[in-house]
Length: 119
Image (cartoon, rainbow, N blue to C red; front, side):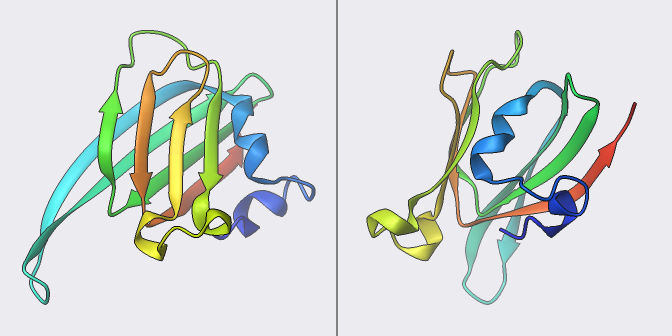
């Protein structure tokens, strides 16, 4: 995951700082057939805002084990890089809401499509 879109505005930003995002404003789920491998691949996208006036749009590549319950606020959004624990690259990231379990998924990569100060 390339954090450069975020670190241009917040130079010290790291993965653990994603917990500042607590309001989900958009969710999209898409499946497509990879014609080379013949395997259906899923992409999960989400836009979130923080109480500090930032908005981020994330795309989770080759997402699996996706569970989403957006009936309320996210209290502990977390992205964990599992490579350091010896996981294979296709299982690299675990995404969750560690406070109340409203979101959980695993994916191969995460793209930051947009990051902006909105107010």
